[in-house]
Length: 166
Image (tube, rainbow, N blue to C red; front, side, top):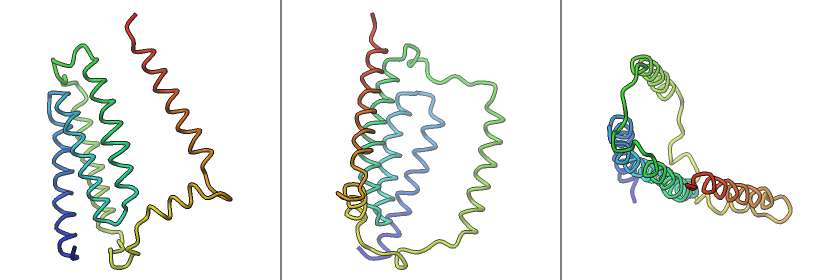
């Protein structure tokens, strides 16, 4: 794909990500908001692909779009008040002001930073380098990686045990 095609793909995915993120925040139906969150996660994975970060894209799809989004959908489905939707609260105006200030800070930071372009960066896939760093026999992190997976499994089993109705 040419540089122009990658730039167009990046901006299309960026618009989809921002629109779906706004939809998640603004929609009153919490189940639909949780489902549209999956679209936001997948579009962010597409942005990672346009930036030659293939490992981050795979992790984004597997962990966020797959696991986290499904857990959120299950939590919404198990909630008793889900059909009523989100209720407005009294903190909407302070939240709006803080969000606007954060947006100004992010825009200022984005415009004042000297970003490297894709041509300046290496165009090699990142998966092999990250796999070597994680799973190398001498200085790899395979044991902490496996401990984290067992810890997450134990937390999942504990959450299921707590959520079961008696």
